[in-house]
Every structure is written in C-alpha cells, then in structure tokens.
Length: 163
Image (cartoon, rainbow, N blue to C red; front, side, top):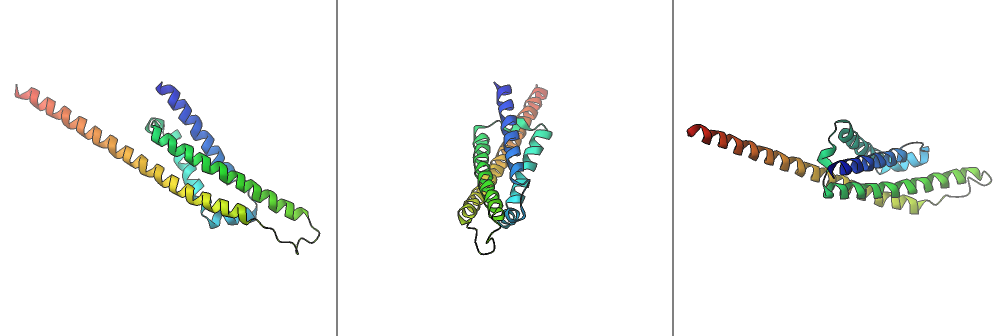
C-alpha cells in the first residue's frame, strides 16, 4: 500500500511541477508583466523548487499524508486555472496583434482574465502558505516523536543497568 501512495504522490508532484513550469514558459512580454505584477513567477519558482527538493532528496515519505495530498491537489487546481487564464491572455494578445488594421485605435479588454489571475494568485499564496505550515507541523511532530522515543529508550536502558 505504501508503495502505491509513493508512486501516486511522485506522479502528482511531477504533474504539478509540469503545470507550474508551463505557466512560466513561452510568455509574451505583456503576460510576463501581469505575472510579475502579482508575483506569480516567484511563487511558481518556490513551488517548483519545493517539489524538486522532495523528489531529488527522496523525501517523498514525508508527503505521505492525506492532509498534504489535499494541499497539493488544491495547488494543482489553482495552477491549472492560472494556466488556462494565461492561455486566454496569450491568445487575446496574439489575436489583437494579428488585426493590424486599426490596431492602435482598438483597445484590448483582458480585465476578466487579469482579475481571475489576481484572485488565483491570492489563493495560490494562501494554499502554498498552508502547505508550508503543515510541512513544518509534520516536521516538528516527527522531531517530538523521535525525541520521545529516544528518551524512552534511554530510560529503559537506565532501568536495565539498575538491576
């Protein structure tokens, strides 16, 4: 059962990593400005770096928790939404550029996509923060458990020497 969870998590991490990378690649200058304005490019770098750490350092077992899976699933959902909105923006800008006739007299309205990206950016920040907090709690909990088991083991050895 544990092997299946590890494979599923590794697959999920790879999927999220690829979605995040696709958002920050092949971007027009106009869309790059929007992503930078909402600090999305840095958030994506943090997410991809976090995923790389877990996969390269073989820390996948630290992710074997339903709570952490929910966090990654929710991050993936937001990233997919952002990818869709990025695509809409790119398409809108490309279409607008292709209409060279009266291009300077026509304005491009992308406020809906920008608003969606902004909302998703806020959600992504919250979900990433939640994931990091949960990982910290999990790490702290494992340190406490390790300390307690070491302490119990030491006490048991001390008791054996008294006999």
